[in-house]
Each structure stands twice: as structure tokens, then as C-alpha cells.
Length: 264
Length: 284
Figure: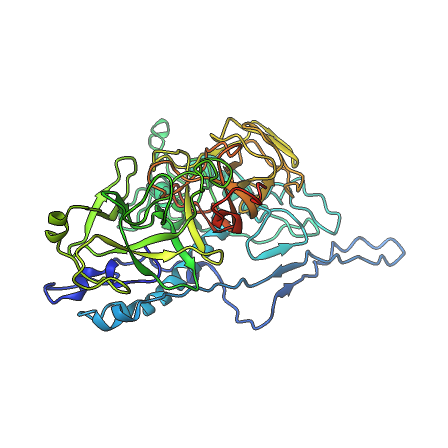
């Protein structure tokens, strides 16, 4: 619709015939950002993050003290972006509005801000395979989910570093991915504790994910293997996972038929 | 699905102007106004696609004048466009005295009396400073034809091959957006003048994969060629050839991150679009 908001666009608000005027009456999607992200306050142009790695294995003493190296981790910069928007309202419309609803649209800016925040929050998952991040710059220069993660220590990254997969969601692929995640390694190639327990899925994959793990939010549950070829066997994924539907993921092109992401 | 042009920024406030003849005008339409060919004796009429470079084929050339933001129908009318799955408010002009007298109307301001029964629209004027938002469609006539999302068949950071996005690019005038993949969220200007073999001097920073997805539009940030649909003047025709017929726009922002039909760009018309003679017009 046009800008500014003008009487000619809201003709029906200019007389008293209406019984009720609904304003922004649909409920927005619930906030998910607070569930998945930590929030820090900042008044800086950018925030920088850096890490120092673990100490490698202590070798057997062979008559000479061996000095071990410690490698730095990758540098990451997060740069807040500026957002701004306004609503322009014709003076006469403010005066003539018989229901006093147009004035309330300034409150709508708050809802708009929260919605935008949620959309960008979903991008963290939806664009997790992109190396070009919306707010961050990573010295490693690969996507958050990547098969090409590297280290500064020189540790081999053949196994324990790839966190990107495109296997269709199923009991088997969830199990296999869980094993892969539990075998993640740190920057010196040492095993670390990763215990994945949550499946974050778009709405379109929610039912599939629930079937794979034998559990739904509404209380239905089954510890039986969902694969008919495995009749009588148990489903090891049963009660291992919380399945979280994330409706905004459906709006992002993440190829939901083939993409699975896991959070520990 | 976004439809119709809207004013993102303008130093001007809307004014009321008559509807030309028996034209139907929709909110969000670009209009021209004044002595012109084709004639518009009564008032504003939709601008539609440019004929010639910066619209010089009709002489004097058509000058963008405003965007319809309201009308003086007492009861708002809405119509689903015949070629677009979008319902928009509209007003239809009338010329005869009887038809004018029969109207129920409200709100006219400015030089028009409250008792003037002629069909009027409220228009945000277009000046060189006016920033407009327009949505892309892959058709000159059908507003439901959204722009295409494709995966490449051959990839490099400097070039990619696609089945056609529906448009043949003009060199340095198209923009490709990475929807998904390692470059997701990034835009690059195409240097090619091709339908399927796209090239980039400013390379994609990360090597694309054939499973990545892209969108392409026939505008770029900065001065560029563009054209509108041929019927309504309600969207940017993303498949227009832009070789002989186009406007020259100053594109400020392109956003292709939205869902199908929500892709848009913010732009202003360049000064030459406001000249009625073809002399001295830039052609990019």
C-alpha cells in the first residue's frame, strides 16, 4: 500500500458505521531466538572473539623435556547492522480516524522490529552452509556447517571436523549423525564432549522427525523401530531427542528434504 | 506476493489529480500526466513499459509523474487483476456529466472542491529525489509469474552456467543472488550479455556448487536499465530485453532474499527520464 498512510486508503475508518475495527489481529510466530542464542549487550561498532587452543598430549619422557605448542583458534568478528524504518501518516487521517486505530500503528514498529530479529535469527540455521555470514566475519572463511573446517594447529581434519551433511532425515541418518557429532574433535585433534539431544526442524520435517525418534509433543510415543523391515526391534533414537519445530526455517531455502541440522 | 510500486522516500506530500478518461487506475500504479501521446486529456494514466531508450519513441517522451496511493471513491473498490493473483484498490474514470453526478465520492483536497464529482486519485509525485520500491516479475503481462530460482550446471567463482533465468542479460546490468549454498546471501553483478552463461568480474568469494541455488534480476545497484510491465505499471519486468526499450533507473537497493514474489528493488528515476525531448538523454 501507499506511503504515507492517507485517508483515501482508509475510507472506512472515517465514519462511525463499523462495529469493530481489528488492528493487527493475527498472532505472530513465537520467538525462537531466545531459545537458541545467547544475547550480549554491546555499544561497540563490532565485537571480536578469539580463542586459544588446548595443550596437546604429554609425551612419554625420553630423557629430554619436550616443550609443547599451543595453537591459537580462529578470530571471529561480529558487526551489528543498522536497521531503521518509519511510518508516515497524513495529519488529516490522524484527526479523522473515528476508531483511534491508526495512531496505534506506531506500536506496530515494535512488533516489526521483533519479527525482523526473529527472521535474522532463523538465518543462523538457514544460512549455516553459507560462508558469507550476515553479521559475522570468520578468519576460517568457511561456513558454520562445513566439510572443510581447518585448524591452526596443523591437526589432521580428516575426521571429527566435518559438521555438514545432506542426508534425508530418518532414524538411521539421525543415529549416524549423532555418532559423527560425538566424535567431534578440538583444534589439536582431541576428542571432546558433544552430546546432541535436539533436532531443530522446519515444520515440513516435524512429522518425519517425530516418527524417526518415536515421540511427539502431544504425547504419542513408540519405542519400536519405525522401519517395517525391522519389526520387533527397538528404536535406539527413542527418547534421545527433543524435536523442535522452527516455522521460520520453512521460509528459508534450506532444501528441507535433504538437510538435517543438529544442536548439542 | 508484493505488487505495485510504493514510495520509500519522498520530500513531497501526495496531491489529488483527476483520472484520465475511463481509465482504471490501481493503487501502486506509476502514472504520467500532461499533454502527451498517447493523449491524456483528463488526468493521469498508467506509465507502463518504456518505448525506446528512456521512453523516447512517443515524442515528446513520457515522463513519470507519480504513484497512485489513494482515490476518492466513497466505497473502496477492490479488484483481482486479470493477470495477477493480487487484489488491489482501484478507481475507474468517467467522463460524462451524468456518470460524474452519479458518483459517491469523498476527500478531495487541493485545487479540487469537495463538491467536484470527477474521479480523482491521490498521487505521490515522482521527482528525481523520490525513492520507489518495485517488485520483480518474470513477465511483461502476467503478475503471478515470479522470478526463477535455479542451480547452476557448471560452476566457478568467475562464471556459472544455468538453464535460462528467463532473461538475456545486458552487460554490467544484471545481478545474481545466491539463495543457498556457500555464498548464500551474497549479490554479484553479471558482466555477461547472455541468457545461460553468466560471468562475474567481481568473483564469488567461495567456489559455488551445482547444488547451490541462485536468482537473477536484470537490474544492478547504481545506474542501470529496467523496464516495467506492459499493462498495469505495477511491477518490474524481469525478462524485458533492455536493448532498445528501457528506462534508466538509479537502483539503491536490491533485496532478493524474500519468498517468491517478494523480491524487490528500491530505485529513483534518473534526470533524463524527466526530459520530454530525447536530446541529451543518457542511455547507459
